[in-house]
Image 1 (cartoon, rainbow, N blue to C red):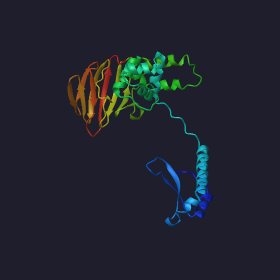
Image 2: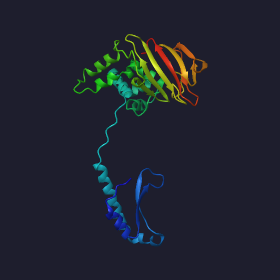
Image 3: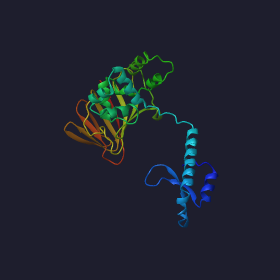
Image 4: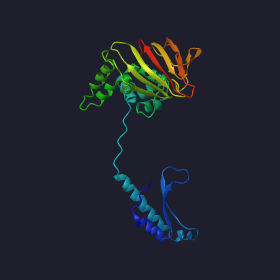
Length: 286
């Protein structure tokens, strides 16, 4: 809503025979506008007092500008951990944004949007990026990584090495009990959410609760994905369609799947309710 410079403006417009009003911008534009409304019989007075009205509205605009300038500044948006860690890994590797985009098969603008948090990657794009950068999907869940990155006084020369060491820490444990509200969550593009259920030191396994929202898919582009490792899944609710190579399977509650993740595959939810299941991806998931 526009900020007006007090009752003086209203009184002066009234003296000109009009009524000062504020409301949504006309013509489909965004925001608000201030306008003077005159009765039909007094519409002709606009011509003789046009300059006076112009001055009044300039005063209103200036007052609104000053009021906005005095408002407390909005805090800058915090870059989501996934994008920040992808950018961290890319810079450590010495790979340009364009080179990574070319290797993954997406546009440089998409990689930039992912790194700045303006867009979330699909499952297939996420695997492609982590494979190209030589990092694990697991490292994107590491909460301690972002804590070290924001530590004051950290030396630029040592932070990247510390982050890499944390991501690859074989002794890190999540559990033995992980509460429902304590799960590390990774929300991906095209309606997919991963929640990490636990981690045993030394085990090369991602233990996940996966949710595919209605219309959600593991690939935003519809392409099949492949990555190292072995995949095990158990559906607890909803329905999920798995495309595995040249075959297509419909998973219903109680159904399970297992296959080598190097086989091209894709999940999608064609239903009207979320599809939820427990997934294990074991082996080398780099």
